[in-house]
Length: 417
Ligand SMILES: C[S@@+](CC[C@H](N)C(=O)[O-])C[C@H]1O[C@@H](n2cnc3c(N)ncnc32)[C@H](O)[C@@H]1O
Image (cartoon, rainbow, N blue to C red):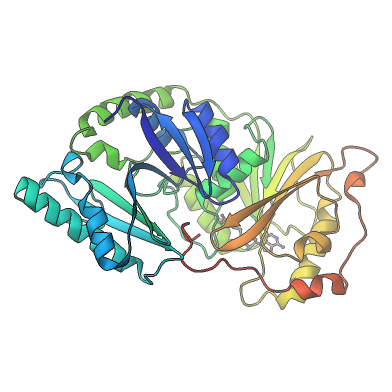
């Protein structure tokens, strides 16, 4: 491998600038934002630092090449031209994952199969034997992305995507991805030095990611990375990672600010408690039953309120009318807060006017297939509670034409939420 590797880290759309900033802090060079990811240069050490410390990246890829590939034969020929013998031996396992965008092929499995066939045939020809496929925990994970007729082939340094921190032990219906939660916290400039509350915490993802930041804990500390099992760099990567992990453990700090969550659903709270325990943050994070539309016992003198309220896509939410009335009540309740800034991730276009406060910032982000906005507010900093934010309630027909949630087209290149 070259001294500095040209790498590509993927992220949720709308968070590329946040990832670029984080990569810069982790020592990456020549950082260039792209759609759904960031290109950068890094030594092996820096790349491992990114695997262990990036809170926002989903995957860290080592691109092997880009090809024009038409039809099944084009895919096979392109994949067969890659010198796989430099990256794999018959004694290591591998898997190919494929994603498609605007492609002539309709099944990603077909593209993965063609790449796998070409790889296996080449290794049989060059090395006289082929490696086995292991789709669960391969040593080498090959990522194929086909956008129209452009095939990109990469190796994934991480293996399991980086959002799999290892603490999600209890699934809930609509959790935020850990990496997206971390990106939202960065967008809100959360550094772990102020109180944090999520009044609709669900399974606790925002709380746990905030806890990691406040504790200065490496998000990847509880997991391994595929690069540690690569045939040629694996042993060196393992050694470097051992040092990086030891440093990370030594540099954790005590959390001096409250981190609190509320939810009205006892099952969600139970999931949050279990996840918090698995994340080893039971002392740092408190959760309790509470209704976000009513006054909650929040710590003084304020801090950051961050949350993603229900979007209304689930049955039993009273349809869009019910959601508007819920957002209206949330607005009433939050505007009574004193000294809190808030960041609210909304995937329902009716949220903003029903909430009836003027945001001081906004950012478009994709929560998997749902286009969302992260809206920033400041409550009760000047002229009485909520004074800066007051705007006229707009629950009238203005919102009614926007009742349908925008859904991304098929074959998008990001992960599902
Ligand atoms: C989209 S989920 C939040 C997911 C969460 N960020 C996670 O990662 O798991 C919305 C949550 O709001 C909760 N909720 C809905 N209405 C509420 C209310 N009035 N007060 C408190 N929580 C509420 C739901 O029970 C659900 O857990």
